[in-house]
Length: 373
Image 1: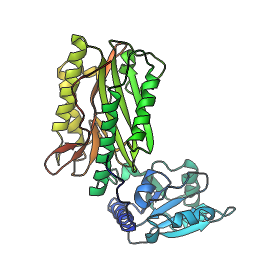
Image 2 (image 1 turned 120 degrees about the vertical axis):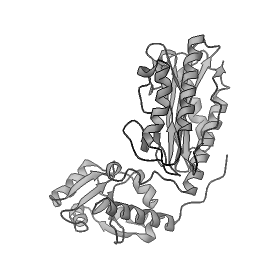
Image 3 (image 1 turned 30 degrees about the horizontal axis):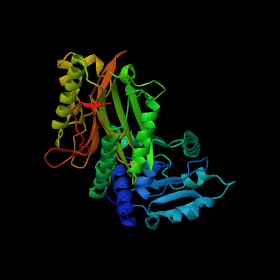
Image 4 (image 1 turned 180 degrees about the vertical axis):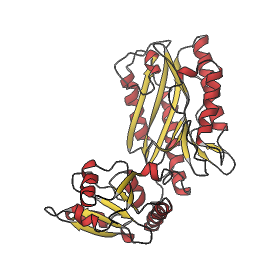
């Protein structure tokens, strides 16, 4: 695994905040309101605890960014990487944080609000500014975090390599006679061994459980003859991994191999569709067409992909109706699947980044059907 990357600088965060404020103005917004969560981390490097006390970043084009914080958290906020570019406005317990924040905002403005803002805080602001309007940030500025710079791509590639190393190890452990939950625990341990600070999910779906795309690993004993869907990921150095591989315990039968080969062809078609200017929906169409023409269209029950960055799921989404064109630097999954209720499922997933002339996989483990013991 690669070493720890250089941290982002105050200049990096200042540029992100400026870009967000300008994008908001271009979208007809009076500003952007960012609560604690992934958007705040991406914009400032500050990761406060989420509580009932209001913390809110206010971004407006042509104005200095302001971070409203509780007084008792101001010292930590001042140490944030993006702090040199921020004006801190603190408030003490017993005072009205919404009144203090409202004075920063146009009373009849339309603001983009980070998706994970608490209703408590948004309603508090609306009470002080009843003529203001608000729209979810992923609706107003869905591409805000979508295009990654070189440093972000380096982190995503390292996270993908760590997930790949995890798969290469897990394919060698015993499957037969063990609980799904035991294999899932092994995967989590491996992700951490290969540098993940956070494990978000470890799907181990054996036999009929594989027909549930988001199956939670349970006490089912894995048996010889099972198809097993493995889907796992988390955060390494602040950026996400997410990969799926489907393995078989012992030799598969003809139908299992046929279904696997269809999904593999669909995943390849989705990847081959990736290039600048192509609409997100065309990646979905390319993968879905293969599965539909093979007669399994009704068993592909989810979108083909989702964006990834400081979270493991974010815009853009590879789904019918999403006409956002692909741009170099976008990163997303390509993960078609077939799910046969009561029988088995197959999914193959790579994280892909858009290049100047196509796409590049950030997961490089074999997409051939792997036989495990």
